[in-house]
Image (cartoon, rainbow, N blue to C red; front, side, top):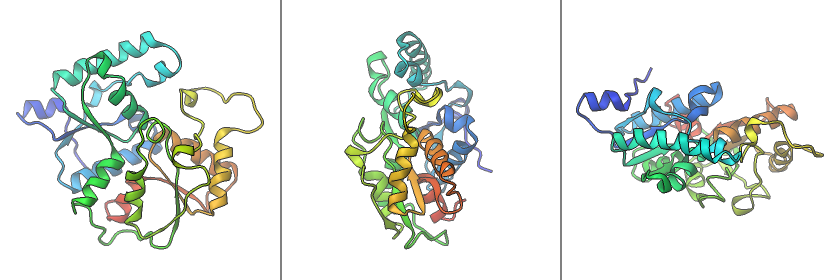
Length: 262
């Protein structure tokens, strides 16, 4: 088991991390997303990245409140986090949640929180480019058909399309794009705080519509980079009873498997 230090631990030891791993609510409490958190922590540890988490000092970024229209609650949650982050003099943050990524990167500066924020797929790509991640004795994805689903708050909101794809390219897999991808990618149905409410009335749920795109590709693996997308795509796979044929995996899990870390 990996022992990940908190910022309080590091400060007590007179040390500073290279990067703060912002885990997020899903990565902390959702059982499926916790596995992604563990996979990414193992990647960071394997690559000798000095990192820490906030632990119990990390609170919700306020993203769901803001998207649902409660600006007061958002600012209250954001200010609480900024006070903690600034108190530790945090400079660089990595997170596996595009919602946290977008909020801390683009909305915290207006409230006094200025940080270099990157998504975990961007850091994984940097580690591969630096030669720190080399697939050795890990699971082979060679020839396996993989399609990548663009998270809205990573793709359209922040223009991050290539890093996740570059990470997948090293697998020598059969990468196939869905008909709606990148700037034209279709939402999984969980964005804008929709994750926390019943779907709007309509003829078809958004994640079912998105699964139609997946099924057209005949992919064996749906790669995602967001805990909300993970939930929605998994539900879509279940809806079509394709659990034995299609696996939904986060980019960190694929990388960790390929490097024999999990």
